[in-house]
Length: 343
Image (tube, rainbow, N blue to C red; front, side, top):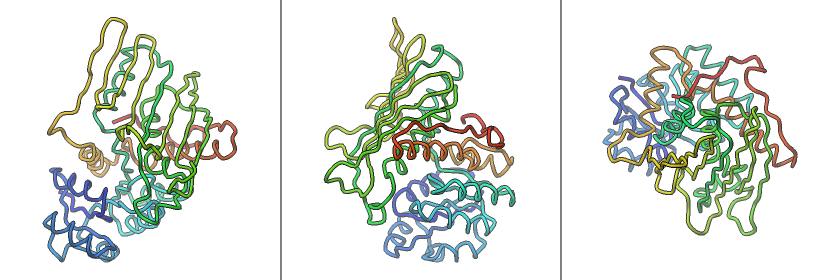
């Protein structure tokens, strides 16, 4: 069992706490949050005694009670807090995006490697059943070559806290990064070029662009369209988004109900539909954290592998700012080891 500390227990931290309590190899032994009332309410719900609650997460690190820390704090705190966790000698699970700049991200990757610690990024969407299904179809070449695709995500999502309002590109940093990471995880060919436009609608509660339209061009010429928005006032998509991937012999479609369909000329087959009682994507990600700790392997959502996702995110941002196509330098060209495959 790995004694685990959750740092930040307000929203996503609660989901992580539940995943830890459900996992046979991890034990929730402490939580930290700067809000005393939230800390009390969440700790009581999780049945954690007072001596396992921390208003200062550094005191938790100094207690030497923990082997793993899961950092679930605002984006601008990720780098600093993850650095503290690694310096204290704990394995670190860090919510996305794991840093706001590539140099910060690389520093965390190097620090974890130097201390032989696992650094895993919370890209749990890779472990959601429909996306595992898409990855399997592509890996097994069931429908032939990928030709193109469309991904649509639109929700009404205003800032929940004042620290979110001035966030740069909130749609991309909070949600779009999941969709970009998914594409990197299962596209047969790397993305080489990005065309993008950002938009902040009049009257938006955000300070910075909350709508993004982009076209991604892969090395083999395949084109994918992505539209993301936090300004929807009508019917909203699931957080997964709506997907249609077109292949030589048919389509894969992820619909509004979360069902994954394989559609061919003479057949229409449901590959996946949500089931009660299935393991959460957070629990499945924790499986890889255990693997990274015990085997020292570079798991799919390791910090090093996630550098590719950050490169794509920053390329999308830059392409929209300059209004010019943005080329992407693959990781291998920069001397980094190749990323591992999907989980």
